[in-house]
Image (cartoon, rainbow over all chains, first blue to last red; front, side):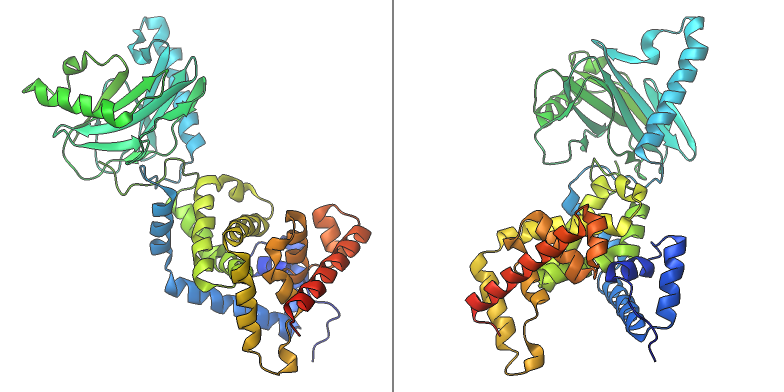
Length: 253
Length: 175
């Protein structure tokens, strides 16, 4: 027999079903549900719907489909949120400034292009390391970029293997427009994670006051590398003609 | 160089998106299905909702009421889809639904069904009112608290909505 005067709202039952009700209200709903066939049937229906959905659309394949729709760029699988990287970056910068500046460290500690600064960080396990010109990395390491611009600018970032193969970080493949950033500090969204490839790579940050076609700049960089012949990939000499491009090398362990 | 390509402006990690889908996905799908009345479109809307979760989901993690947050996103996605659906198709869908009911008096089209079918005929606030009352089962007092309207305003608006349902019913010749 049902001894209830009023049922919880369907919304409350929905929240109860996914443990999204707070303590007191949760207890009220729980007490009601224990004595109400109708509400128990409603919750059983939600259980069945959840089961059916997960059977038809398992989480991983659903995630893959959602990712495709969201657009291309580099995956972030770390649980460290974007602000975590930015905060870690600021801490690292602060420590560098605190310990290094009095010792007369050169301005190379911070990369500068006409007041535009590029800070590159590699996340390795729990540790975050700032990259100045080169870093040794291995599979699973993640890289993240923080830009500081004195004025609004357009930017794009891509990676090139020593084979000349380009992969895009920002904007994603197929996009012909750079990212517009405001004056100040911008931590680029998402991080790229290195795979098992043993090819050395160079990350390029293109920056301009005017809109540009990222693929065109990447094409010129590729051509320059092909023309460079037997020059060492880790040397930046072959990039001397690219004023609008800054880069760092990642050597694979 | 990297593992599969993914959105640049992804706010949540894969683990967080997957966890949100496993926990809330079926509720979101249910709501989309209710508004769109089409399994394929509802699944499509479910994907779109989680694209938004992926991009802007940081506020979902902070939300006091994550289910409400997701429902609002789902409603926006579904209403956008409804806008794309021609009004003629809406009428055809209602006619198809009612044709299958035969003379069964218990199968008359309820106000709730009719209103939900014609949600896109209402303004944004009224749509929420319809969903809160007819789908979420809120009382008029609860709606007043949720929307910030007085109870009297809620009552008047609901009365107007039901007049509209009656008018739709008459114009479509539905029992």
